[in-house]
Image 1 (cartoon, rainbow, N blue to C red):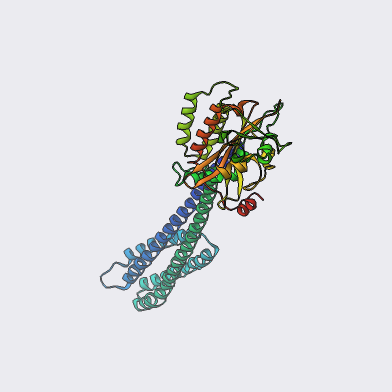
Image 2 (cartoon, rainbow, N blue to C red; image 1 turned 60 degrees about the horizontal axis):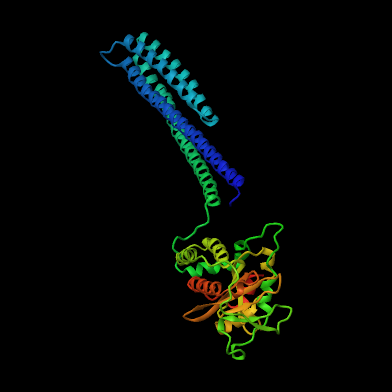
Length: 434
């Protein structure tokens, strides 16, 4: 993803997702804290009810104990009954669900029964009937207070179960929020992540092979108004060249086929002819040094542009053979439009043209320029395994006969030999190209 507005949008969405996820997490955590606090408060109130019941029983039983002042314990029981009312009301108020509130409501009626029983016990104690008071205290009052204890204990246990289930549900929601936020952020990171480029590829030639699928991207589109140099490259692929045996007095690097219109015409080119500015030797040395240090295929377009400038070439194409050696394919180029490159077909080894002969014989070939037209220099790319391709440079009229530029083309082809390797078989390449 390279569009700046889209990247900014993805980044904003990622920040929004992170902020929203954090807010939801905080809300769920606050809700869990409130549940734990409410549960603790209700549990504390239930413990107070149980403690008050035990104290109530002990104080009420002191009514009929020998040596105890009944009036003191009667006032103490009254205080404990008031404490029971407050604690039971606290339990009812702390109940968060209708189930708990319904379970706590009958406790108030039970406390009312305890008050009535206590009033009757007091009457019998004051009336001098301790046996009747004892029977009431140790039977009916004890049973009723046990109902209060059982109800409070059940309500407390049920409240703990509901709180535990609610906390588990909140934790699951937090996990969903965390997972969703993390997924959104990871997707955003993947979308914003730049394409991985290996600083030191295992095999530079393997990395350069990937350029065959992106050849149009490496080719420079000429600005409007400038004629596209697409006419001479078909001439390289179609013009015939005479074998060296027919012209023994002509040097091997100066056999020149005619243009595509007259493929049978052959003419000699003087080996020392010069028609153009002198070659910039220091610039050529720097270029060769830079070619020797290529690690990233993205550096090649700039280096090909510099190569074209040194050769006074309007366009360059590196043709590379497949593993069978049966055909040449354009691997990467400079100076040609995407449309022109897309129309180029494979050059077969047995074709009668300059590129095919250069590849078969591993010798230089030139395509001489007609008046007002372009010429070409075709140089073999040779490795220890033999010739694996050719470098074709489209040059202005007369430049193809410049021995210095032909020599420079050979030097550049030798540098490229360390960067290219044989391509997949012809049928595989055709399938890859669609």
